[in-house]
Image (cartoon, rainbow, N blue to C red; front, side, top):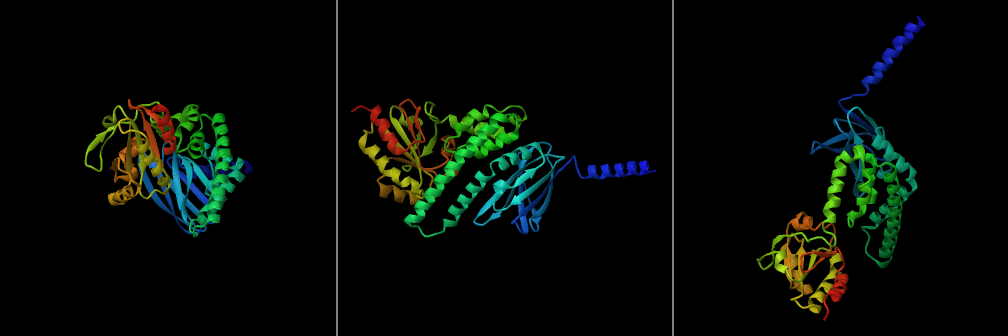
Length: 374
């Protein structure tokens, strides 16, 4: 009789267990300290279409149910002081994923269940002190952002930035070791994106992308990173400069061929860019130092308001070829030349090949001095 009871209990238990796992959906449950009550925002890329959802959260607890036949990233975002924080969860049908941690440290929120989530959580655990220290330093910078500018605040911020860069480098090395040890894991792609990829020098991630194999190589994130890396390598020194057509401030149509048989300095800037300020004097020096028959300058302004650029150009003595692209960061020229920050300068030779990619204006003066013998 006891044996029959045991069998009945076992069958009931298995039935309950299986009912908790839906093979046609995934479930995400969270219990995050400090997130409070309100709403969380969920975003998932389903068949190249972005699906957005809001989910209620009470005392840090929430549940979300979605569907995906393949492993995809699910982005969960919430408000954190002066900024928006987000957590990435990797999900696919049949998985019950759990989140736990502290809302003040989104990078350290642990995600369990699913190979990708487990591997990333292991990486976070192994480097918990480094990630926490970096988060604390970033919060200090953010807290000081509204303070009145003074020298001591500026120096302190520079020190904080320097410390963050050191931590970034250590975490980058840790991520590189992880990728070498897990070349077929989607988690490796995430670490390449989060810790190895440098927006100024995306080519640095190419050696690690070339290690990726298996299922990770079929993932959309791999395709995205490879495309970005490949596109960037096309604008490195030695490659033909991307051609373009644009209307300059004199209403003339210009393209790369218009500067044939001359060295061309292409400068991306904007009136609102404080970091561009020191570059203008160097660009003027290039104009004054080298004959126009040898060197031309082209500045592409990302100002949406043309009058603001025109005023600055007059003030700084910028009288060479200029294009005001009101599309700003959506500009086709920005995309063609892989501009991620400004100022950004290219030096192109007389045959249309790139000599210098994303280099300071004062370095261009040195290069041109060597190229053009007076």
